[in-house]
Amino acid sequence: MTPSIPSISSEPDPLAAAYEKVPTHLFLDSLSAARALAAEVRELIESRAKEGRNAVLGLATGSTPVPFYRELIRLHRDEGLSFANVISFNLDEYCGLEVDHPESYARFMREQLFDHIDLPKQNIHIPNGAISGDLIFAHSRDYEEQIKAAGGIDIQILGIGRTGHIGFNEPGSSRDSVTRRITLDRVTRQDAAADFRGEENVPRFAITMGVGTILNARKIVLMAWGENKAEVVQKAVEGGITDAISASFLQAHQDARFYVDASAARELTRIKLPWLVGPVNWTPNEVRRAVCWLSTLLKCPVLKLTDEHYNEHGLSDLLSEQGPAYQLNILIFNGMQHTITGWPGGKPHVDDTDRPERAKPHPKRVLIFSPEPQDAIVAMGASIERLIEHGHEVTLVEMTSGSLRVADSEIAKFCNILLELATGPGPHWEKQADYAHDALEALETKGPFGEDTPILRQLKALVLRGELRDASAACKAAHDRVKMLDLPFYERGRYRRFNPTSEDVGVVTTLLREHQPHQIFFTGEGADPSSVSGICSNILKSALKGIGEEAWVSACSFWLYQSKREPLALDEIDMAVPLSPMQLARKSHALARFGTLSSTEAGVLEENRQSACHYDQLGLAEYEAIEAFQRWRRTPV
Ligand code: GLP
Image (cartoon, rainbow, N blue to C red):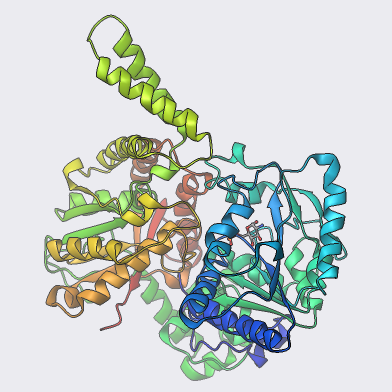
């Protein structure tokens, strides 16, 4: 989730310098960071053009640089920026992929940038992943030579992998490493699994510029968006220089900077523990964060914290402003206590002053937005069951079909069953047999990585729909309460390169106006903005913005459920729905209906248990598990 950041300043914070060993610029979102970077690059290109010289750019792949590339394309198209004097070197490429392979970085770069600007083809350099193993050494050496011959890289753009890699310099890469073949780390291959339709399809090796090659660039900018990068950004920026996190080597470069959005910055000390860095504006949120942190750090229930505890851990300011400890403890204890409710839709006919959700109206019209079909059930399966039991009119809104998650093998299985039925004794199903043959042929033609044809997309969506039907029934949600939006951005796209449009927003706007809900649950705040949940959350927010101040919007309450990667922190929880052992078991049964859960998603039950442990450690009641929600406040239009 997005942390509350007192004031966003894109300049590095001088007070944080004791922690941040590389200048770190914080941006409100990836778009503003991408614009700032594109403006710098533009200046470089244009000033070089005036001097009749080339600008040498080091380029990266992955979803992170996509907003930056889109801005460069815009500058070219709308403002006449020419790339005629640019020479480019890409960081890396997967081994074994031809340039036209849908997941090759060569193709990615063509589709995301090169096909849309006037950078001369002969100036583009990308390691060749298709060359045979014995030629890789010579190829890598030539690559280094070509960079030198171009005069070295003026500005190197980087993303960061969850292992802390830059390029593909996995843990263990040395400070002086050069372009070479590397074995990909397990985490990196897991992260690429969705792109390759399964971890087993992700190449094991890649060719990458070395850490030394990257550090030779005159200027380096590393970009990171979304909460799933927060932990590694913190280690790279604040930790020691170590080959376990190759991005940490940037600390020793004279002109390297990190450009991060609010979510990727959430683990930085100045954001997470601001009282250790400088004066704090003690808002209720900050106070809650500090007290929960202190209680967790000292493994001491909130009500037992003393003035000394506060003083000895950098919180004397808070103590003198809002203390003594006793008073702060009670305040936070009560606040946390009031987050707990078994009535996620509000409890009717009782005083709701201290309850997270209002009692009226009852029943409520509730919309639960799920970016891909499994998301909502993973995060809030038990709460969905509660809402339905309590008589609310719950609609599960499946924003996308989820077809990209379904493996080809599922389709092959279905078609082969169909063929057996159709060709065996019994019903005469020539048409069905033809259909199955067509689908199997489409699978064969596209190969494991090709684009799914419409018939394959449809079948995959149906497979997931079937799983969802079973899972939602296990949460007591009747199938007619499930609404499939099949948003076009997903149907037309591929992971890491979706292109949402106003058409998507239109679909959600219509749905909202039709339902006029009293309560909305959604996710994706703080997620990587190019991920499905990040995109879906932005689409919902744009729809709400467009609708403006219609009466139902102002009265509607909004709840964020946890995203795939990051459970809510204690201080972010505004509603905690406790689960009994039986409820947790039922949720587990519901999840088992999905054949496509990732290991992170399957880990949610453990996270639910962990959330309960955290409450227990604060000195609150001990539950089996908890599903947690954060209140989201709409900015009035
Ligand atoms: C791959 C690339 C890196 C990139 C990383 C992060 O590993 N080789 O250069 O930084 O992915 O990808 P993303 O930007 O999609 O999070």
